[in-house]
Length: 91
Image (cartoon, rainbow, N blue to C red; front, side, top):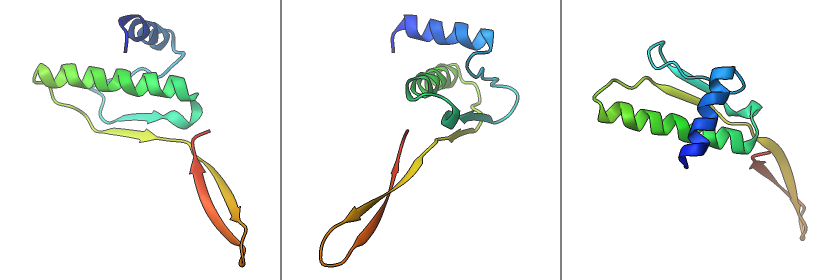
C-alpha cells in the first residue's frame, strides 16, 4: 500500500467519509458490507498496518470484528438430475 493511499484514507476518515478507528475504546468493528470492494480493502489494509505498528511499539491490540457482505446465488447444473448449487460471492 502506497503512502499516498494511506494518507488519503486517513484524510477521508478525519472528514467522516470512511470509518475512523479508536484503538482505546474497545473492540473495533468494521462493516465492509456497506463499502465498495476497493474502499473495504483499503480500510482493512490501513487497520492491519496500524495494528502492526502498535504491536511493534508494545501496545495492546483490541479485538477486531469485520462484517463482509455477500450475495447469495444459485447455479443450476444440467444433467440427468437437476442439481442446485448455492454460491456466495462478494458484490
